[in-house]
Amino acid sequence: MDIRKVKKRLTLLTSLVLCALCVPIAQAATAENYPARPIRIVVPTGAGGITDILARIVGQRLGEGLGQPVIVDNRPGASGIVGSDIVAKSTPDGYTLLMVYPSHPVNPSLHAKMPYDTVRDFAPITMVSAVTLVLIVNAAFPAKNLQELIAMAKEQPGRLNYGSVGSGSLGHLGAELFRSLARVNLTHVAYKGAPQVTTALLSGEVSIFFDTPITVLPQVKAGKIRALGVSTKTRLAVLPDVPPIADAVPGYEVLGWNGILAPAGTPQAIIERVNAETVKVLRTPAVIALLATHGVDPIGNTPQQFSAIVRADLGKWAKVIKEAGIKAD
Image (cartoon, rainbow, N blue to C red; front, side, top):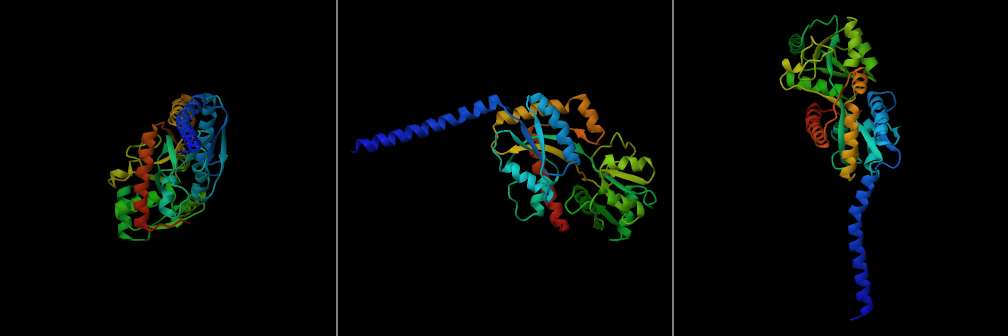
């Protein structure tokens, strides 16, 4: 037996064992000292939208709680895929996070090839906020409630149209879910943004629009549009006289949201730390009041609860997109 070869093998084996033992120790040390430098939140949209606004509101206060600056990095493109891909491929050390919105679970059903797996490549931290949709019509529109709208749509198949800010947007999917469950035939018309859809609604170019409360309220108060229903199962405090769409269309519910993810493989201790600090921020009265001005409700749930919502939306919107034959713009 060659003694030198035996010693070489024993040395290699010892090194491998020591390396394996050091991995959890290194991870523990990393989690214990976290954070030791600034944290980046990638926002996969442009500046100024609600996702960007929420990232900045939460990020500033999260940084105060963690003792390190939190920098917002806008990386828009391809309905959030560009920014999300950056995070999916980042080192899972808690220093690169992602603020997502409903397009995150929608994209896999709209794009045949995705550069990442929506579930496997990310570690949920918490849902930051939730927002409802409001079904609105022009104030001069004949239908005064949901029942009359549905009856009108059935009497005129395909003649009533609805506007959206683009294929696969939450308003588009919300309208398609309404169309499917109410068993009516509506025609989709896409626009570049919410202001253009609102203008089309006021001019009578489109009949229906699913929009957010913060955009809807001023027009409702001015008497220019009428709100017929909200997409949540309960009424909104800001629109107490508007019933849930589910009252007329059983099973209907659409929830818009924003949430924070980390790359898969991020140590659990770091996930729990960021979750705890974010939830603390979202429970602050000043933040609750500030988010209310943007028409959103703070959530702050567990990573497991947020994961369940993402997975449920993946299946829900996949079905709607397939049945409606929706394609990416």
